[in-house]
Length: 219
Image 1 (cartoon, rainbow, N blue to C red):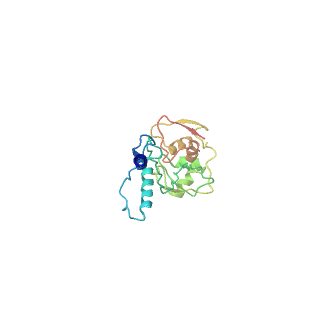
Image 2 (spheres, rainbow, N blue to C red):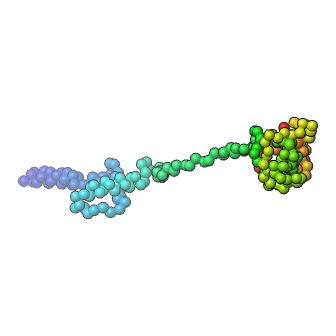
Image 3 (cartoon, rainbow, N blue to C red):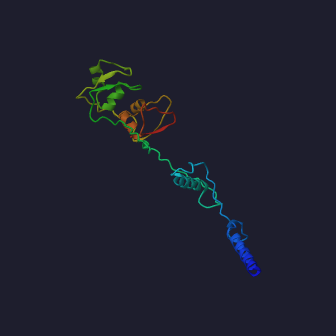
């Protein structure tokens, strides 16, 4: 009888040791891989019995991954997003326009009327228009001095007396402007020079102001 008892006790002890080894927790063993930590969810999701919990966890995990960056330890770089702006049509700037200066030229032929300017007189105008000064005075019923602004009628079929020279000073030449000179006064000093020709030759602009000491061309 004792021969059976000892072997049975030995078998029971071996089985007890074997069963005890099988029920030990795998996480309490000395070796093996370290347990993997589950990342914390950035903010709460639905309850455990929610059928959409897995979908929510995936969405939250993707959002957290996008916020923390792709690689661990790498700084997150903000990507500037270009905001489309309305394309403004730039109005072309006005290009500088060359100012056209209209310079008068001598009127071809004989004018029918003429407005007297400062510094002009009957004999001056008669020389310029190649007409007899007596005819000019007679048609306009004038004698001697004529006020500036007076409109004179220029006679036709009249000629400057051949015994007198129309030109008082030879030209072309240059002239040194004196104080009080005007284009019209200078033209009268030369006799047969048209003031518009002087304006044109010197590219002068209205009101054709001259400065003492200025040198001008007399055509």
